[in-house]
Image 1 (cartoon, rainbow, N blue to C red):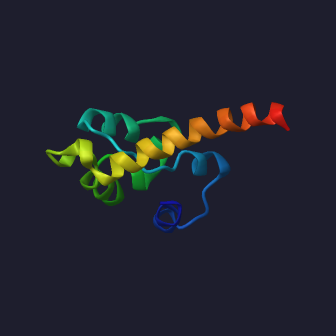
Image 2 (cartoon, one colour):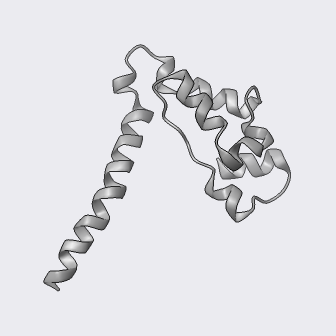
Image 3 (cartoon, rainbow, N blue to C red):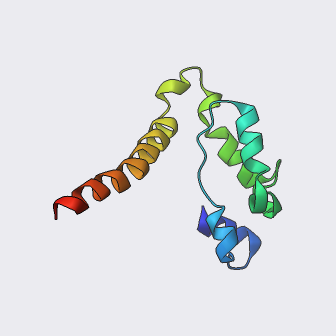
Length: 98
């Protein structure tokens, strides 16, 4: 995503812009539209509503399928979020044992 946005902008992303780049996994079209409209992301032309890249990302979203609960992108996002929030807790509890 970073490389594609930079290529389309024909410049490097700032640190703040880079932090706004992510791959959403939305189960409702409204949530995807909200994701596009969020903060700095909304000011990046490649991610503007109707832009080619934004529409390519829209086409990959779980809400495009009837079985969105089993959509690979949604499952990956769920696993990533679970791991992201579990790892600090596991590390914190193990710290006392060391």
